[in-house]
Structures are given as C-alpha cells and as structure tokens.
Image (cartoon, rainbow, N blue to C red; front, side):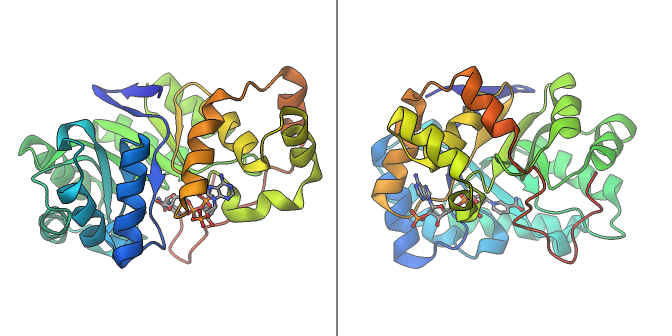
Length: 272
Ligand SMILES: NC(=O)c1ccc[n+]([C@@H]2O[C@H](COP(=O)([O-])OP(=O)(O)OC[C@H]3O[C@@H](n4cnc5c(N)ncnc54)[C@H](OP(=O)(O)O)[C@@H]3O)[C@@H](O)[C@H]2O)c1
C-alpha cells in the first residue's frame, strides 16, 4: 500500500469511506476492511457513525497506532467552543484519545476562519488531533488559511474523480505539499454512464470502478477514500493497485466530461 506524506503526516493513499454506513453494518465493514489490509478510515461527526467506527477500532486486532483515522467537525460547529466539544464527543465515540487527522468538513458561510483555525491548531498542540486540515476548501479559501492565517494544513478533502476536474486546486496544493484526499472517487456510481470507461476496463480485464480509482491513486499527492460496504467492493478496490493504465487510457479519461459534481449542498462555497 503506497502512502502520502504531507507536512509530517504519512497516511495510506487508499482509505475506506464510511458515509451512509451505520450501526452494525458500519462496524462490520470497518472490521472487514482492517482485516483485508486497509489502514486508513474516514468518518465524520456528520455521518453519525463514529460510535460504530469506534466499535471496530476498539475490537480489531490491528493496533491503533497502525491505523490512520480521519474525522471532521460539522460546518455549523466551527465556533471554537463548539469545535472543542465536537472533538471531545468524536473521540469518546471513536474510543480513542486522538485522531490522526481532524478536518473542517465544510467552510461555513460567514465563518470566522482565523478563529476556527486557531482552535484547530490548539487541538493539535494538545494532542487530540495529530494533524489538521480542511475539506471542500477552494483555492481562494486555502490561500486564506495557509498564506494569510498560516495554518499548518496537511490535507484538503474534496470531490475528485474521472468526471470532475480539480486542476487549479491540485496545482496549488502540490506547490505547498498539501495532500488531496479524493472523495466520491467512484462518482457515486455515475461511472456506468460512460462507455469509454467500460472499454478501458475490458481492455485490462478489470471494472470501470477500478479504472477510475487507479487513475486517482496514480497521481502525485492524491489519495482516495471509496466507500465500500460490501467485502467484494473492498477487495476490488485493493486489487486496483495492480492495474497499470497507459497513455491511451489516460487520454480517453481526459476526454470525459469534467463537470459532474455529486455533492453540492446549499452551504457549499462558490467553487473555483
Ligand atoms: N468531505 C466531504 O464533504 C465528503 C463528501 C462525500 C463523501 N465523503 C467521503 O468520501 C467517501 C466516498 O464517497 P461516496 O461514498 O459519496 O461515493 P463513492 O465512494 O464514489 O461511491 C460509493 C459507492 O460505490 C460502490 N463501490 C465501492 N467500490 C466499488 C467497486 N469496486 N465496484 C463497484 N462499486 C463500488 C459502493 O458500494 P458498496 O458500499 O455497496 O460496496 C457505493 O455504492 C464517503 O464515504 C465519505 O467517507 C466526504
């Protein structure tokens, strides 16, 4: 399993997303993933499944220190006192004394970014989060966080897949050594609408999902966290590592639409 390194943080490029998993199904999926070799788990306060993820973390034979665990604070809990209460509640549910990466899940309209990032830095200094970062931040917001406020942002988790481009954001992040974690890496199933992906998949005797995933994992500074509840999906995503895409494959993927956004809530920022 290849890793990403960013501002002192090293974590596996491929992780398990857990949005929409809950209860025992979530615990079983996380335990199964850890058994299969996953060492990067992504959850969030907003997913209401941290307790179920925590049950897996508490009962697995995999040592806590070998697992990269990311969680995120809700966009409406970004006032410093709310953020502190949030991480304390998350840690209690996750049954751990620290998370490896704590992210601001979404920028909030009208937020006091300096105050929120200041609190995030304090949580890091106190050891509740090993590293800190953001999610759904545009180039403009990242510039503010990194250049004006000087926050030690290790990662920005954003939607990125074969049907959504992130060229300017990725260029900015690479220049500053900030990792990009791609969410919805399989475009939540929308890959099936594009026969070009099936053609690449048939050529290599793999699935379109594996093609889309390996296209991301091949990129410098990029990781991906497909949600996979089924054991077969978890294994298929691990097996994607063995796929070798060639220039013709990459050219066919480059020709696909790059404006398909799966997640765009009312509180989303103005995308770059
Ligand atoms: N920061 C944010 O704002 C944000 C927003 C959205 C998502 N996320 C994170 O990113 C993760 C992934 O995004 P997502 O869950 O929205 O979408 P996704 O990973 O693009 O798609 C998940 C779907 O793909 C299926 N799947 C997984 N592997 C497959 C394979 N090899 N072949 C065929 N189907 C496969 C899953 O099925 P099964 O589960 O049935 O196996 C599930 O239905 C989330 O779980 C969450 O952790 C973060």
